[in-house]
Length: 214
Image 1 (tube, rainbow, N blue to C red):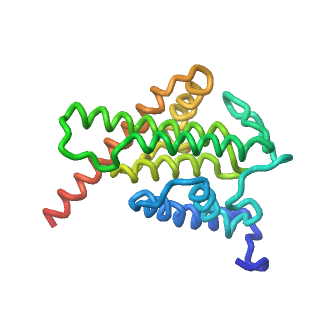
Image 2: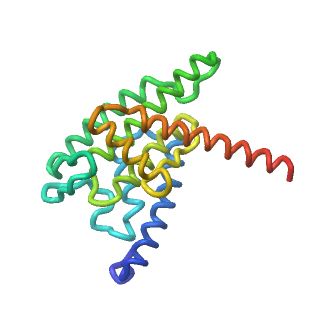
């Protein structure tokens, strides 16, 4: 986008961010359903897609020295000078975790599938918290964390989670993040994400049933 077309009002900015977010959702879904390796470059590309028209100077780059963020509800994110290092450590850990799971389990018993599902939820939950905790960007950390969670879920053939920072589950979501920050307890966030996935299954089944009737 040219300089003359950059947003001049708050409404224009919000519209451009919303448009970018929809493009990022589609990008994340496409990557999740494909075979592309999930890397830091993928994370940066998704962030850039959200903000390249709205706030191009921060789009697709990690925070750097001098771009510290204020303390969040239950923790203080690392300073900008440490972000790249921490994100690299996060990615290496993620790469190892993803390598331990089959993306399309076949011929498994019900118990084995339950264990597989729990393992996927554990990785998705960990990803959401890690990105929220490191807060690697100047803006859009929550959106990016949830997009990456859904990319992981999509990679394993699961519906997206609708857990988010707005709406009726905001308080439960923030408290679940705090439980991890303060006590290392991932269970509340795991439950929120798992519940949202099951609700997604129900929506998909209802749509398929409706399509059969029409």
